[in-house]
Image 1 (tube, rainbow, N blue to C red):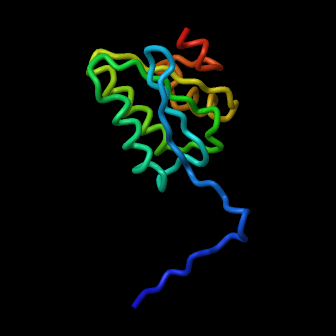
Image 2 (cartoon, one colour):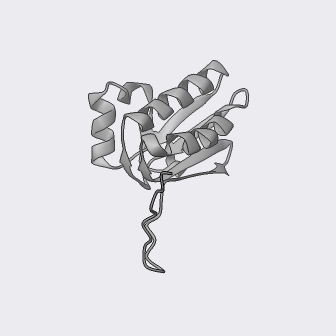
Length: 125
């Protein structure tokens, strides 16, 4: 029998895991990603991005500002969200200010596919 031990943090010092939440800003659905967005977090986050990109003509903003880390799985989620929203006649924009995230988008050639702004308000107004 294989038993996995769970590492417990002292009470009051839990490390927050990756979180995806959505809310509306005008006609946009904003998907805010927090924490480390990697392969382990991708499945849970995909549910949120799929819900935001499901409606016909959805206008979606993905806010990466609270994300402390993104990897190729996060980029895959962004590409999936983009494909879904464009297939349904919508639009997708990013809010991204971290130099490392912007560099990752440039190096992978994805920067040109994701319009990026420093704030949600700049896109949604």
